[in-house]
Amino acid sequence: MNLILLFPEDFIDEHLVRLTSRRLEHVTHVHRATVGDALTVGVAEGRIGRGEITSLDKDALEMRVTLTTDPPPPLPFTLVLALPRPKVLNRVIAGATSLGVKRIYLVNAWRVEKSYWKSPRLSEENLLAQRILGLEQARDTTMPTIELRRFFRPFVEDELSAIARESLALVAHPTGATECPRKVAQPVTLAIGPEGGFIEDEIASLQRSGFTPVSLGPRILRVETAVAAVLGRLF
Image (cartoon, rainbow, N blue to C red; front, side, top):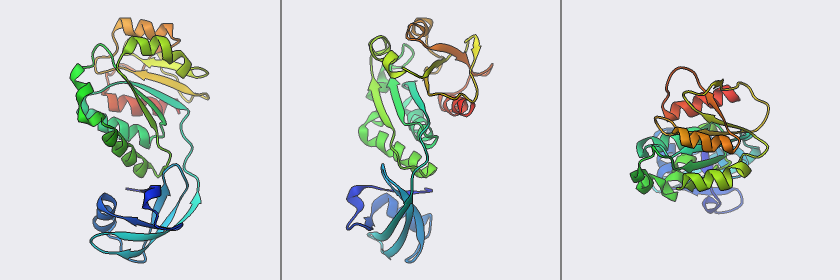
């Protein structure tokens, strides 16, 4: 991890934190830090700074924390993502978080297997863990929101227009006639379908909500690759 993410419950006084479990193991075995070393830390939804290790043993470590800088600015970007395969979901959430995405909607689509919605990887605990990994990678502290929508049509017809208001609304589609724009200077709401893409009826529904189908080129990309590729083009 490039940043140790702290939470209010970690603080034992105003400037002192106590860490156990995963973060203790990482500091001990990956950073190989000892008493007196300073590491980059940040408080969830707060500032970033340095934490100097004041005590360390096999059960816990304590750090004296000084917070001096703000986190990187969020991307003006909303991701509407057809629920990917469970084994892909973790990589997508952690990757999107590390890229600065702060608003994610996981939605149903015709090509999304019903069994995906029963995966334990959709638990609040797991989705939080993946976002934490993304923030730690990127040295960020602002937690993205994730909302689940199991019914495609009501979501698109009743909510999506308001979500995408005052943004450039795009849907990535392999046969889109328009090339995905580059270096845009406004907020973007992007919909990405499942493997195989949205079906034509779903594309039509998205278009009625103001979305323009765009192509990322002649190659068909995996979901996690498409998210990174389109963010690189847009911003």
